[in-house]
Image 1 (tube, rainbow, N blue to C red):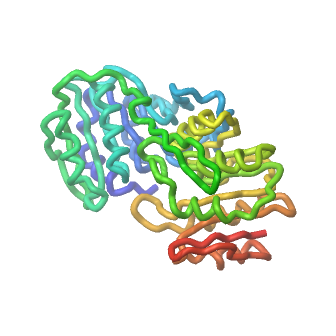
Image 2: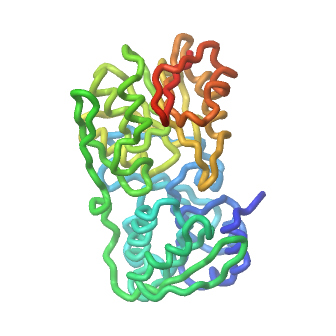
Image 3: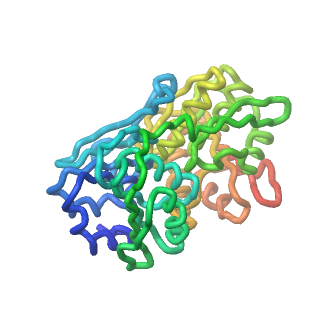
Length: 359
């Protein structure tokens, strides 16, 4: 049971949680909350790995994309005095006195969470942020200033905890104000893609994904999985190109699941969406897996996600199935793929990316 540096800093300040109605957004591990077992708290998770670790009974969650409306979705699980929500956003108004945000990587994502928190605590409520110094906690204070005067509570373990008392009243969070729709083009195909801050490659067509869509091996049929789907760029394009495909999309992020559902709806499409940590908990075989997978955990390059994914992908593919994967050229994927697949080809390359096919 290893607490992240952020949680260790919070543990030093455990007394501040005794007073008030608290909501935590995106805790960085599942164990800090154990110190607050006696207290009623609400926890909002936008990432499925920590959510499933906290609740320990849900290995994955699946949705029909048509069931996810603009209002979002949520999976709720109570553990003792704690209520955990896996959801892209919460639209509560004046429900808590205090909201603690674990600082995300993207500034725009943080701004969106601040706005959400302001609606939840209202005037005179408090918003707290904890984050690593190298993760941008210093610039976080600047972004909090529009809500009220900011002060540092404590710093340790290369992290800081800062607090703002909200000066103005704020209405409930409106997802529509943050949802962006862009038109992407590949060859003669142009199509709308919906995205939110915090989703991979928000508001732009990622160069690796573009290479995959331009150079993928054509002639796909049957069941296809878009792994680490982000805003649903790959899946929506493939369904426009091969309308008979039965698509599934998976991601660890509730924001990505929501954005993908919006993208599919904007294109008149539907598919099965899986919230999962890697491929864990996703049942059934597929003919093809297509992916631009992540190689970061927080701020660090992390191959364990991809290693585990490649191993699980081999098991999930039908006998003659293929894995098509785009990645930065500097990553050691040909070797990792060759450990599990007898045939690995590099089918396209740019100065930055390689496209691999494994079968």
